[in-house]
Amino acid sequence: MIPLSFAQRRLWFIHRLEGPSPTYNMAAPLRLVGDLDVDAMREAVRDVVTRHETLRTLYAEDAEGTPFQRIVPAGDVPVELPVLDTEPHEVEHRVRELVTHCFDLTKGEFPLRTTVLRCGPRDHVLVLAVHHIAADGGSAAPLARDLVTAYAARREGRAPGWADLPVQYKDYTLWQRELLGDEDDPDSVAAGQVSYWRDELAGVVQPTRLPLDRPRPPVAGHHGDLYEFKAEPRLMAGLEKLAAERGATVSMAVQAAIAVLLHRLGAGDDLTIGSPIAGRVDEALADLVGCFVNTWVLRLDLSGEPSFSDLLRQTRSKALAAYDNQDIPFDRLVEVLNPERSTSYQPLFQVMTEWQTSAQATEFFSLAGLEVSFLPLQTESAKFDLLFSMGVDTGGGMHCSIQYATDLFHRRTIEAMGDRFLRVLEQVVDDPYAPVRSVDVLSGGEWEWLVRGVNDTGGRVPVGTLVSAF
Image 1 (cartoon, rainbow, N blue to C red):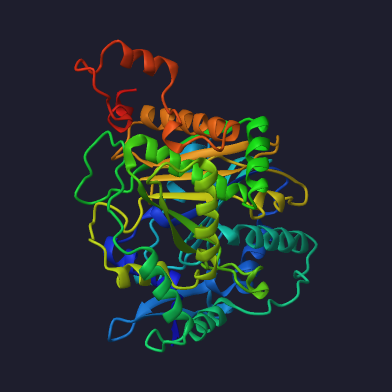
Image 2 (cartoon, rainbow, N blue to C red; image 1 turned 30 degrees about the vertical axis):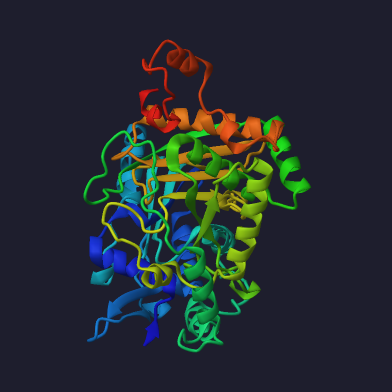
């Protein structure tokens, strides 16, 4: 039997605990304008499923409850591409239904579904939905690239002439165990990395104090929404210069700025922030569709009076150490550290950041004879309390979004948080040597509100207690 990778084990146990859910779905709805060859597209999907074993893998447990994966031969996989006639006004609703499909991995359901919505003779929407157990964000580019290649070939009546992949995902799962070794062996990679994280994350305060609008429910509902905003090119250029002068990356500067924001909103001096790491540690894995992503935790100390420059140096040091200890699975860290567990929040951190640097699928979706565009998806789930996602946009600025748990936050609070984040960036770029405690997260109107006597005693009101009022 082939074991699951550590990332897959986590998703399997979540699936077993919570049941089928769209929370861990990945989706790409594509509007296709032109003459779509549905038969060629169906064959192209079959080619991609044949090429990438994770897309034709089923999951089960043995008699002892240990999960394993079973790769189904390509010829035994029923590749379907149903075509559903859809009125233009029904597209959004149909797409939402398709991308929120609840894969039931425990009942032998394959982790990929593909559907075509036919809105007119030359107007279609191709909806790809895949469960995270079979793919991650880094899989989007190879999946798109291979589908494009296969579709072009099938339109010409031939099979795609691509080279065989050097490895498959099952090879990675076995290699991962061999690499880490036994934690009981003090010389193993696993033992060394566990030791690092045990020291680094000992005594983490949980949960992070955030300016919640509502009490935490006993069980996290994972209901979410998305707020998007932008940083102007001038600000992005300043951030790049600031990071480069300190030997840091822009993503490190963004993480430090988010820590400042949370600190000034009342989260305290000892902060933990999660971040995904691609996990594709070997070049042979670059073109595979699979779940490689792991999570590492950035712990920052804002006690004393550090400047932003000081904090950025600390962030850089911690990030580089984390990269050197990235292989141990996050769930294993949770087991080892054994923090206070709750169904109400994610262990060890509740705020996640991600920096979009990998090639996006949009770069590869150029289908022969078709104009292709991505349909925006409305976010309806949230894995974390807050997920800050950033990346360079086409105009040289920074595209920003905050995915948030609607069980905890009002939208107006998150919109204000986005404004406060930009305000933090402006100030730290302008004066990176100013103390973090001097960074102002209140707007002029909010300061006026305070001056008019919110605190009648004349004392100071902690910023973190004010956020939900705006």
